[in-house]
Structure formats: structure tokens, C-alpha cells
Image (cartoon, rainbow, N blue to C red; front, side, top):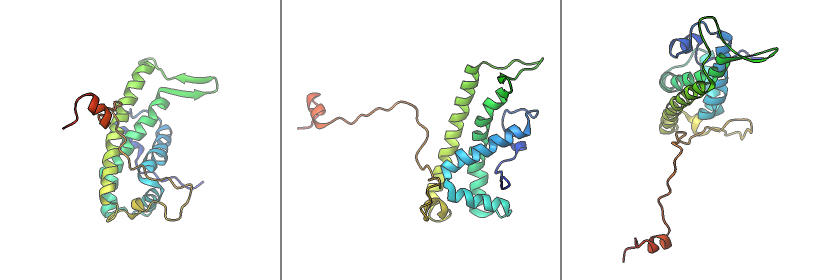
Length: 190
């Protein structure tokens, strides 16, 4: 297995979120890597993701790519990693099943509180994700050709960037009425 490339450090995850410094690094490393591979790659696509990985590995992240990483991907990845670590900090898979964590000085939260936390963090992730998408859409032709032409080789296993607005309030109002409905309501102009 190739060495994993991390776009966010465990220390940064602990420093800039509510995750306690006592949480196991290995647990958070897995959450960061999953967030990169699943959430970030879904937004930016495989080609741009691979370019960023190469730049990180070669310590050549500069210019527009540094701006992309520092100002857009970093916050998005931070929230995605925090969301992915929530459940695994709350419960562990053991030989005898899944068990909640507890100690003498603390009590695990109820699952409803955990769900509320996840929802709030998901809203933050969607906000940062949409900022990232808008930034990439604005500069795809001039700065990030890997985003614009995501799959010139037509490789089936490449992830297509999700360019849609992911923030949805859950309420859709279709206010367009047909000509007949307008007529019945007396809304047609004569």
C-alpha cells in the first residue's frame, strides 16, 4: 500500500475543532483520510485531487494551488473530518460489540445530541463546500484546468466533480403556474 498523503494534520484537527487533544491520533487520521478520499474528492474530482496530492508530496504547493488549499479546501476538509470522527469518538467497535465511551469524570451524550452536532457540522461543511465549488467554477479555465476537464481519458473510476450547490433548506416551492391554472385564478392579462 502506498503512503497516505494528508491534506490536514491531526494537530490542526484538534486545534481548530472541539475535538479534545486526548483523542487517539490514529482514529483522527482515518477520519481525515476518509474525508479527503470521499468528501473532498467528490467536490473537486479525481484529477485535481491527484494534482494536489502530487504537489503536497513534492512540497510544491504554491500560487493558486496554495490559495485553493489554504482558503477553500482546508476549512471544508476540517469540517468533513470532524463529522467523520464524531461517531468513532462516541463509540468503539470491540470484540463484544459496539460500546459507548465513558469515564469516571464524564458521561457520553445521548444519540440525539450527537445527531444535532452532526447536523450543525454538516451545515458548516455544506457552506465551505459551496464556497469551494464557486471558487473552482470561477477560475476553472484559467487556474485549474484539472477541474474543468476532469476526465479527458474517460476513466470510469475517476470521480466527476460535484459542481451543484449542496445547501438545500428542505423546502421547495414551485411557483410557476401553467397558463390554464393562471386563467382559472384570474391571473392572465387581457
